[in-house]
Length: 631
Image (spheres, helix red, strand yellow):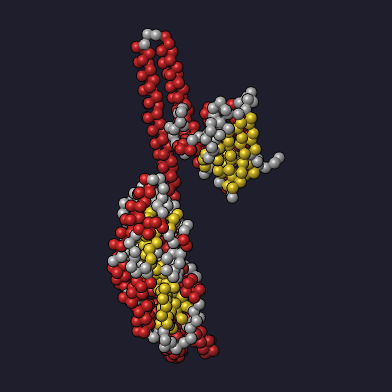
């Protein structure tokens, strides 16, 4: 008995130890995780602060440069005005201006050179005084090309700040843009000056901004600044860095491209010693013609060795605390296991059975007041849980049945309402119009005394009667859609029967090669295909001699190609022919065809050439066709 008690005590001790150790480890490492998260949050806030400082400083610097650059807008406007006047004069003579001559008539730019450009509606430089830019195609830069189009179509002029040339980043120019009076071209003028470039960099130096941030934080290894085209503008390196660094330019270019394309920040670790953070710096100037191409990308490289050491120390502290807590737990559980052996062991056995899902099992009789109270409480709780589970299961089954019935009822009601809507519209509008016309002809016939006009009225009334008959037939067919159930049908058999019925004398050349496929469709498929062939004979014109039907596989779908050599369908009518009411007769044939085919996901479209014949494509989805089994 003592041996058994010792065995049970050992098991209880092990169970309690594992449980408490798990709880302690969970709490300890949760605390470690929260501390790590807090440290990371602080680090991220610090990085965000540095990033925001750099962004704000560079934006302020750009604002200063913008005001500085605006002082040259007057000269550019003067150049564009001379350019515009020359264009207007030469346009009267039926030619374009000679840009070299125009350049010679412009007042010299005292600090550098002037270049002139003539840009057409496609965004291509068709003439310029700077030969390397000849033929430059701005349509490759969609956002800038869109702005150029707005300038050309409007009556305003726009200016850019001094920035890098798209073709040659080593050049810094300031551009101005003005539309020609006929809005066929854009007049562009650019000024370039090394003196102004140096003066701008002295007054508003972005490098000094980066240098200040590097000097303020010794953990910053390097800060690089790129333009929106991925070209390096400036780079500042920590002079007192205690770690050798060698981050390839290609790696930074990769980060720069990601920020430009995705328009979001990115953080990456490099060789476990560096944290590289790349971010976008927007150029806020909605009036610039090249807005969006002056955005910049900043890349900050941090030395994270000290941060990793802090994390390691924090982990070691958490580990030591956990080990001490485990030792104390083992001692406590040993004492508890000696005082609570058999009653707890039995309860554990019963609870394990219940935990497997057997809620009919109950805690066995226990000795001692505390264990009996625990037994009663657990048994009462299990009974309540079992009853709740049963109630929930019954309610769930009932709700599932009601939901399923409701979904089915809603689907059926929607289908019926849609069909009733179409039928009501057809009955009320189309047939009423025809009856109105019929009554009008009857009234005219009563007032007419001559025979010939009366015959004409009778012919018109006969046509109206036929139209009403077709409308009623369409109503009957529309009501039958989806009622008899969908079946597998042979399109070749249907087309052969239709051709033999419509053209029994074989006056036309008819070919059908449908590859032995069956189509899953509404039984009214035969009616739909008959209407398709009938349209060829009715509207194909006197030149109709050939009708062809074939199949073609496209990915996983099957296409049935129907063609003839009749008059064809104009491009503007290729989609409207499928609308109800469009056409020379009732306008219901092609509408009915599309409705019947769509019941099983089949689509129909027309892409033939006008005056050369129709070409209808009936596209059948993968689940709606199969190969016919050979007998």
